[in-house]
Image (cartoon, rainbow, N blue to C red):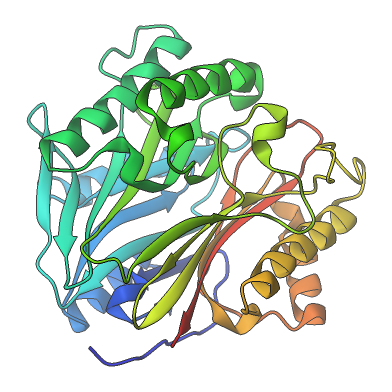
Length: 361
């Protein structure tokens, strides 16, 4: 595969296609109109298979989108922020691979992901995992989602402890985030996650069209050779999230013979003691958050130019221009960044960002 990373600007109303780093592609497409059509066209041009497509939009667009994609078998995860139940379409982001042939993962008669492999590892990406019973309590729905992920992984030769990254979308997150954390921690204890490696993660306030309390995506990696190293990375400017009973790692690094990938968890304006900083100042929150991300990158010999995928979550989309000004001032390149209107895990946090970076050997 050619070592090619293409980066262009990325704004609201942008279709973003990020191909998994081991396929050595990253593509961004911009449009204010048919975002979905352009995203799919770009994937076809690169001979890529989309593994998971995120749509960040309000519910009023869902019926039209569903009608256009009915029976197409597209792996779509539709998310609307808690604060924009009937808001606009903000962006789309898809993860895809080329040069390999992914195999669908089925659970209870439904496609929920793909497995693919190369000479160094096997990979499993599960998307849009929903609770078995939408009428159950929030905590029961949470346990159901984790159990579904565990079963689907086992049925395909993986263990849940192979998980390197999760994306967790909680409807009305601010009402029950502590309860969610207790269930996740209990599940990690039972499955031995704390004895292996706690995955990187994003937990954000985003609803869904189905009325589920929780929807989750999972990325698992199973090395074929000792040449592949996977390990957690501590944040130089923040304490471990485990210290305040939130079970995720600040970042996870995957070292392959040809490149290194750093998966940075959802990051916000939190100090080393785990307290929110700059409670009433959006600009300062964004600046501190980007300082934290930069410190993580630098600690692994990377910088802003190594970014190839990201999602920024805004409690108020009116703050997006503030981020753009800060990014320009800091010299952060316009890499494929999707934006979403969503609640962050604390009521006094206004901004969160997750990024992936890759550095070739």
